[in-house]
Length: 180
Image 1 (cartoon, rainbow, N blue to C red):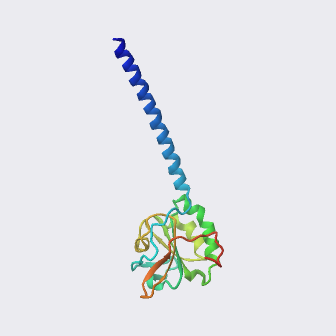
Image 2 (cartoon, rainbow, N blue to C red):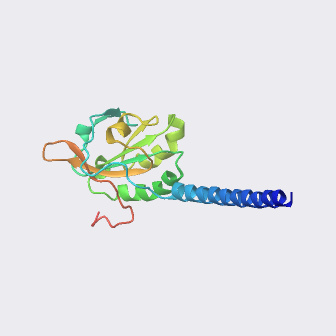
Image 3 (cartoon, helix red, strand yellow):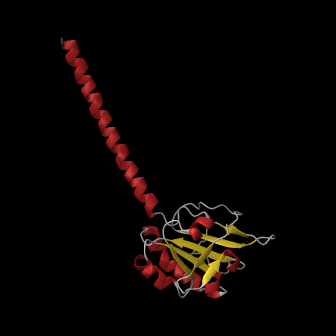
């Protein structure tokens, strides 16, 4: 009988130890999730050289826009107002875009929002420096670019065949414009 009591005691201690380890793992996973959420920009999901599919959209200014309207070396950015890294990156991006040669015609920003009211703050800040498109979730522009996460910053340009392709899948906002 004392053998069974000892066995139950050992199993109880092992179960409690296992429970403590599980709680520790859960805590670490939450910390890592917060770190990834706070990461500015993350890993690009669009590959260099990837062709941009055809799309048609209308800017917030009422101008039609398609991939044919994007000229040489256009910066394409994708933001969402509900994304904390997007909110943190927005002021630096506005400053960066405002200094690009070619002005707002060389910058396309897509804001993924459920309605215009949600996107209004982003649109107000971005309109002076970029052509801005507001679309719900994964709309036609984000789908054409293959964007799966926010924020995503890309450089695109026509290739030798005239197709719009990704030339850089990461745009460093802290880098001097002369080297960008």
